[in-house]
Length: 108
Image 1: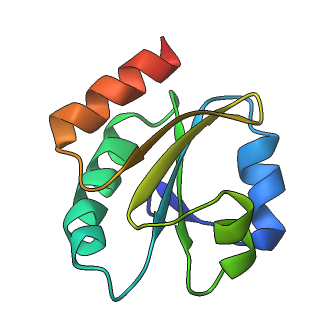
Image 2: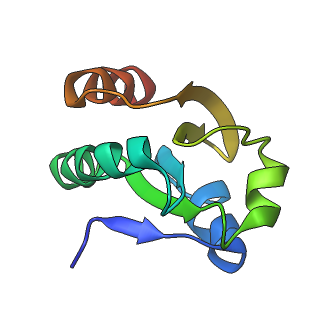
């Protein structure tokens, strides 16, 4: 079973906004080259940080409402949520080390 949740409008509130731990959401698209590069990195940090943070992915083409709601202008966009609020956003491919550093900052 994957450590990464596939999120949509129906599951977003429960899994992200009402989560008891910080959540990292990867907004991506199937046609996006950088998204394909970032995907395995997100999967790896999700696996390594289970219990510390929840990781989910939102396909912006299938979930345009969420993309509009969160002002996604480019993919990949990573947004960290804590207590139902956006606390950090990064756009573009991140190295595994950069992403882990961000997670460590968010989780504390």
